[in-house]
Length: 252
Image (cartoon, rainbow, N blue to C red; front, side):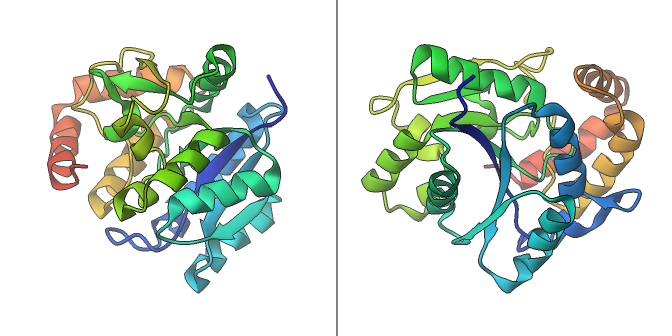
């Protein structure tokens, strides 16, 4: 795997739906970002990872978490996340990027890193997993990231000033497949058609539910964690009902 590859984790405290969610105690005394960075340290191998946060004072808290765990951190624009990613990648010399959203407590880095291989072997612009044919990033699954080249982000940045595309880093690419080479592969571990599940964390309802699920499955290694999440949610209809409410409320 080329050494110009890197993982960029986007994190901020200024969420409108659940302010400060990244730094609230989630499991024991650890917050979401601490859990993710600790997990990445064990699973990223020799692929470097860096947190991309904003230049707002409120995100000093994100910087403090990174400093405490000795993880590099870059600060850029809050709303123009596309620009923040480009600046971070340029700063750290990443040509191929794994994009990760930090509000995903059950994130599967092991499978996500395979997308770097797809990117490098096919020379495509974007590689991701799909659920019912849609890029998983457009669903509520919250289990995987996506792989993208710096060159294609720079190209997208040149082609659009639309705030929606500036905020959602890769949206322009898969919305304009005639301009980019997009590869999406069915999501692993039986999630390829599960649009009824939500493991991303945006609201207080998500937070409470995922804390419960994390106590039941979060300690397990990949892939056991994902099989257990499927089993738990299939056996407990009330979990799926809570997820359905949040999916309807937070539809993208």
